[in-house]
Image (cartoon, rainbow, N blue to C red):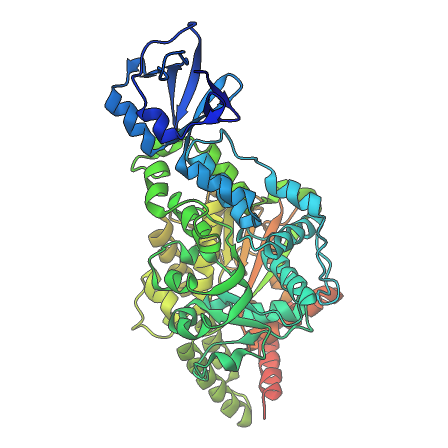
Length: 616
């Protein structure tokens, strides 16, 4: 009898032998020829001395870690697969690999291919993942993003690259994570992606899920980048609960709170694309909003997060499993492989394969990577959607002002001051509001958005200065920063002696990692050099563009070697929005001519103009 291995099949006299029958034949005895080769059983290598004898039955002897396997142990291998040969190596092929081979030989989608490769790597059946697979596939397909008809603004080159990558993934049904650094324009890129989807399919359906404070901001971003698209805001008490009522809308914007409550309706709609803004809100896979998100029916999903890992590697698994279920395996397997109680053990884990896997579906660029394409200063305007209680209080204040204006406007300035305190935080007017961070977020959408922005800056290890007008607001913010981040921010306002100001700035500049300064725009808005900060937040808006420009110049000035992100926060559909538009217009026209000395009078004039504009 002649035993041989041909193309991975063991043959006896030219006829294939069933693997199970092969193991059940005869004894496993000594080897010949002193030839050694390597047998791979699942993930574990073993030394095998292998031969075929010319006796009536084949004779093997199997060794694992230099110990000979007993007949029972050898027979137990039958349950797991069979041997194949490849040159000088002999492999043990499991039934799982047979299943993979079948799927690979059939028509395989791109998501299926990525899952197959990831599973083969996890099982130790391939040595490495192709690190640039997606880039190579995209280059082969040469898909061009078609968004020029609907998208009216110019993108930076790195943003065009991002849009091309996103459209390729979406067209192939691959869920992705857009994890660009804060300030690099994730919103602009995904709006261009929406334009691409709708230019290819005008009947397409897109769902955008966002935090409550950012609802108005998304509507305004669409009006800026793609004014012909009119997203429908699914929010508030006028919702019918019928999916048919949403059928006429291509783009639906809804908050995470409504996603959870209306999921039974939303899951009835087949979406071409689902976008999750600030997707770190879904890092707990067992939260109500995460469970609801997993019930949505979509061809592709994109999670947007500048901080994909906030606390541990499990955050990455949660986001990946949201947009690409099963890609990184189940939670239990991922946790046992990568998540350890001790950070040192996690760092010692071989993360190269995980990194390569994530690279297939994640796009992350840092500011330093695209610095030559960026302006020195990036203005980021954030429209905030007020909660119902905030809106009611605001309207009550406006009614007071309208009544005062009708009576000559003699009490207008105190009312303006009251309104400005309210937009800083209702707690400045209502002492019953607790001052812990959770309560402060519940009572102010602007404060909640501020915490979200600071979370991202803290994760990036950058420095930030915040301008706030009222001392009570500065104290409120300082306590919140201590509670949330465990640091005591430096404060420069009217209470800070002159001799203490520069030492505070020096300490801030020399500190490593995340740090924060709280400044009053009049006290610290001129003469100080704080180029260590790469982020500026105008939390309490100044109704004077010159004051805001002077404040911004504390960080954006000669000596600054990094891009400065400047955030302007304002409540949508309020006088703050009118002020923001006025300031932007004057900055654009270089007409910053309002003198600081006219500050209070200008406030009154602007307020009267606003009250006139909202008359019915």
